[in-house]
Amino acid sequence: MTLIPRQEYPRPDFIRKEWLNLNGQWDFAFDDENKGLKEEWYKNHLYHEGINVPYAFQTKLSGIGKREFHDVVWYERTFSVPEKWEGNNIHLNFGAVDYGATVWVNGLFVTFHEGGHTPFYADITEALKKGENKVTVRVEDVSTDLEQPRGKQYWEEESKGIFYTRTTGIWQTVWIEPISSSNIERVKLTPDIDDGKVTVEYLIQNRTKNQEVEMEISFDKKIVSKVIAPVYLVQRKNKLSITLEDFEKGEGKLWSPEEPNLYTIKFFLKEENQILDEVESYFGMRKVAINNGKIELNNKPYYMKLVLDQGYYPESLLTAPTDLDIKKDIELTKEMGFNGVRKHQKVEEPRYFYWADKLGILVWGEMANCHTFTDQAVKRITSEWQEAVERDYNHPSIVAWVPLNESWGVPRLKKDPRQANHLVSMYYLTKTLDHSRLVISNDGWEHTISDILTIHDYEGEKPRLKQRYSNVENVLKFTPADRFLYVPGFSYRVEPIMVSEFGGIAFQIDESQGWGYTSASDEQDFIERYYNVVSGLLESPLVQGFCYTQLTDVEQEINGLLTYNRIPKVDLNLIREINEGKKITFSK
Image (cartoon, rainbow, N blue to C red; front, side, top):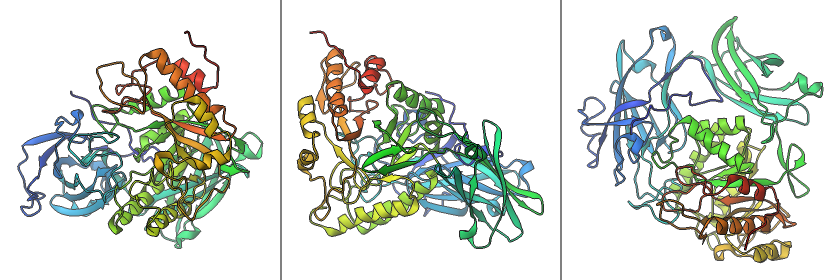
């Protein structure tokens, strides 16, 4: 299948006007004997295969579609730098490459990055030459490496159970852009709805004391604040709080799933009235907090109705086929009456969060976990998680962080204090990087310290659900998957209670074969089962939110509300009515 590769700007919360997309056809080779480094393929190699970037070789859209193990692969293509960019530094950007990537330009090493879900770049200015240039990428992704943060990517050749086909290599957009040697490297935007302000931290590369940053904030193209701030040589000083004029007048716009209002903010780095760099971003004025044991959004109690979203696609796996496919997933989610998603074991691409911000849906951002506990695994997940939180900090849609799920990678929490310490450290590390959001240390069970007590419960009978969640004593007795809700030494601290996985009702409407946690025989049976589990939680006096498993079928799992191809299995209006707590009458 031929598809025009992804062309939209890949970093929508940090936009530069000038850029060149390098998606499309690249030369490609498997290196199963791992001889490319010794033979210096980055200098000269004859490739016999091609690949459609940014789709991994395991996908149909890549043009290859092979799913057996190939742990080392090489990419290469040529490009030319536009003449009008002369005088600038040139950055080569990768949205994500799974897992370890080594990059050369014209045979010269420019960077190495480890981590399959987070971006990186290289300043390739010194490696460039006039006319045509060559970029070469070697990727190593050991298929059976359980110390690697891999999430749902299975370590056997055929997917099975809750695990899916692997992704190896470039799976997000590659692009180049011209940058001044002194430039805006990053901005961090923290809204404060109580005071009507936004705190702005700006990181300037190669800063000098003669520089300043002009910031212009607008809503619906109307300027609500404009300030000029000095650039200090000491980075911690490059931070200020900006009052929004419309909030001062009582006319400020809050962000929520119901009203996803976004403010635009433009940055101009100047030196002696010359613009060195210009970046456009946005933010939403919203606040998520726990107050008196209640989950609040914008200082009001808010019931989270989430759906579990794996973020996989049948012809492209982790990479959405097109930008509109991302938008469609969110639109379908909202159509069913959900106000949020839990992105499961996948650090989503920035374009997903852009559409979540713009269309209005809450997101729980989750790390792809390792599947064993070693020093190397801890080092890897900690490093990559920091990069993920930093990348996505500015998105208002993200209201919670989930560094670990169901004790994956920490299987001996009851007996190994190091593993419990790891959960605690991930909680506090996340809070250190981002104090503005909720953090769940280990979603589902065996919590140490979490802002919400989240529970995975695939009970299919409404009376049992109602009984279990009728009082705190019953809840704390529950042992999902024979696991305690808390690790020994930790206990309930009156956190809000959410059932963050439930349902999982299998319903087959096409040729797909597979499984679910319970099974429906026909459409009415499915609706009755869905009504029973959702209403059972909605009627609980304790539960403050839920996350239904799941949005779509994925490979051998057929427990989605939609098929793998995003076809609704039942009338979505019925799902919405049930999610809204309306009574449904069933014929005998």
